[in-house]
Length: 343
Image (cartoon, helix red, strand yellow):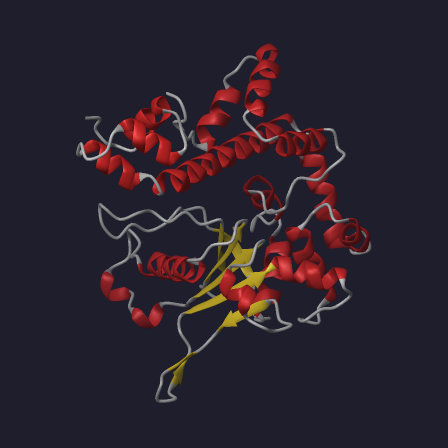
C-alpha cells in the first residue's frame, strides 16, 4: 500500500539476519541498508570498516560497555559519580524486564538495572532523543523498580517482608538530547539529582527513589569550551563519550585515562565482530522504522478531520486530497491505513 508504514521490531530483523545463509547475507544487508538514510548508511559503513566508533548510547554498545557483571567497575563508577553517593557498590546485574501489576498493564523494560550490595536497585537508562515526558517516565520506572523489590519471592512468606524492608532505588536517566524543561533551566550544572521531597509546609523527607537526570549534550558542550559545571574531569569525559563517541577532542583526552581508553578500544574491537555488526544494523533499521512511523503519524494527525468529513460524506475525496496536498489515490490509501471507511 502506498505511503503505509510497517514497523518491524529489532528482534525480528536480527533473527532474519541470523537465519540468512552466509552467502546471502550481503544481499540482505544491502536491502536493509537501502532502508536507511544516506547519513545512516555512511555511518554504518564507517563503523564496520573501523573508521568510526559506534555510539556508546546504542543499546547494543551500552549493554556491552556498562554490563554490571562483566564491567562492574564502570557501572559502579558511573552510578556513584552521577548520583553523588559514594557508598554504592554493585552486586550483580538484574536481568528481569519488569513488574506487571495487572493483566492489562504495560511491562516496563529497563536498560541497565543491577542489584547493589546494600539491597537497593540501581538503573542506568540511555535516552537518545529528547522526551517531553521524561519526568513522568522516570517516576514510572522508579516505581516499577520499587515494586520489583516489594514483590515477594516464591519461598518467602508475606509476613517476612514489609515496607520497612524496601531498600530503595537509584534511578539515572542519561539524556543525549536534553528535553525542553532542562534547556530552559539556567544553570552551569548538567547533573540534576532529586534526593529529597519538600511539602508546601516545609516538611522534608527522603523518598525511596533517588532520581538523577544527566544532560549529556550540555556536558559535551561545556567540555568543548573548557568548562565543567560538575568539577569532575574524568566523569565529564565519560559522559562526553556517551554524548559523542567520535568527538576528536574527547577521544584524545579519554586516551589518557585507563578506564576510558579501555572502553574506546572495546567498542572499536566489538564493532568488527559479525554478530555485533548484525545487531547494530538491526538496531538502525528498527530506529528508521520507528522514525518513519512517527513522521507518518505526525503527517496524518493533521488530516484526521478530513478523513472524518470524507467518511461521513460531507467532503469529496477530490477536495480533501487537494486540501491535504496529496493525490486522491494516496489520500484513499491513508484513510484506510488510519482506520476510516471510504464512502
